[in-house]
Image (cartoon, rainbow, N blue to C red; front, side, top):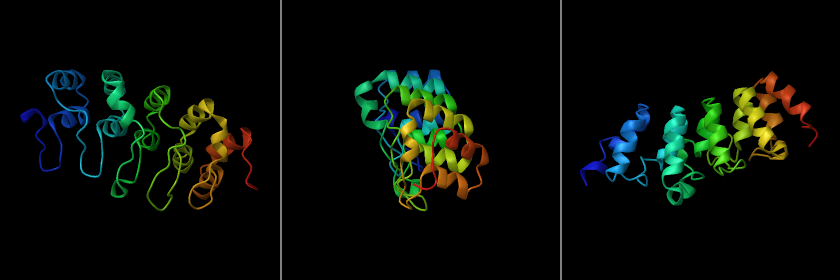
Length: 183
């Protein structure tokens, strides 16, 4: 079908509209039968792209359009060559606070683990700690403070990740929430 034709990068018209933030085009393409199930190389889906680019309006539309489809996409991970991230990891890494809040409200897994090195099995909080994203850290902790006790494949708590990367503001926040370097 022409509407789902993929270019050399694997992008359909829907992906192009999402990447460039054209909500009305996204709506039109989907209403004309464009598939939300097609993935880019590396298992990158429409939610990954909307979260990566921080297009809150598009992300919200996609999440609400077909909940049966998005329920399977919201916690799916990209391939290792695409960092092994879920949509929430992309939103966290790129400091898209509203996208993080929306994804959590739509049942994104706050403990979803990355699948690639160097920080394999990192949660969204580990990513926020590495990047010193204070507001994102607050959003994640407001949702569930027990995530400060999750460890990645290196045996690091988010506090270790923040300390390793010099994320002083996140360190302060994590300590205030009860994080303990002694494990």
